[in-house]
Image 1 (cartoon, rainbow, N blue to C red):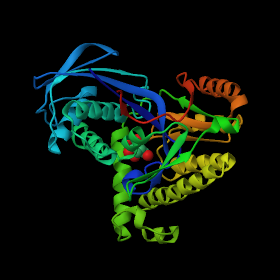
Image 2: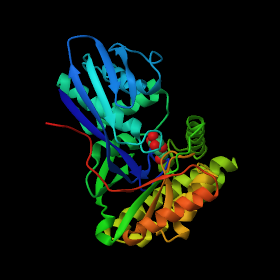
Image 3: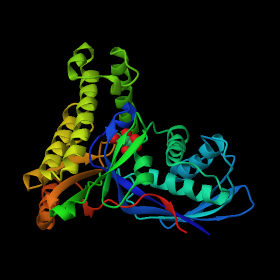
Length: 360
Ligand code: GLA
């Protein structure tokens, strides 16, 4: 029996920068997805999970369009591995997870990475982490059909306890940075809004298209090549201009956040989180009134900073708070949410956890 685990992630800062070849700073969560794989000599992969009764099955020659629902993620990984020329084998995969699903905490990347590591362990295929991330991303882009970047998979694979990951997507380079708020008397609260992200795939794709158009107007292949905000005036479309401004300013905030963390300057980190949220709200327009309420509430009740994390239109808000105040702030946020008749949130404290691995 092969056992592989991969964590979900939170992004501390740097949203919608990955597919623009910019910078982001995710952490891997302690919450993770576990795949127990019993390979056999068939060509069928059978899936079972602790979340639902029954089994799903697909052949290892599966193609895009053959499978939908959550089993498209494992099927997509098998397809993407085979498409990259790697051997894949049949067997039974039993899946369990402590990563909340559909909350913007990358339960999909955790599932992809755990399946991929389990399959490679069974076949003896050895890949470096960047190749693993790219194959998992291909499963999501070309099999599941979500045009996402590389952040979630890199975070899940490279995670380290008490470290954030400064990712440069142009260099495809990951630099761990100390991130241990507890040793500074702080805590990172995660407020899961339980807001369904309807239309999020279409909106995500629309943001991506805006960024591509903006780069082309500026004669660049990606917004990473664009230096300084002055040139943004050359983008006539006001929406595309604001989208590009978010990406440029967000890249700067990520780098500033790396400098602040290295110096233990959590006040500055909190300020940057607030600025990032405002930019996502006003320029990139991926927050919702519900999400804005949560971020505002956290700051009003004493958080050093708060921002939505992930692709947008729902999901989670993260808030950096004094550890001694975390329960009181969580209660006040919950009561502000209840006063507006939004669903009751789940609130927990996150720590940076280790990355995906096969148990030996
Ligand atoms: C989702 C995508 C990532 C990234 C974020 C936004 O999580 O999967 O690739 O683009 O949204 O930062």
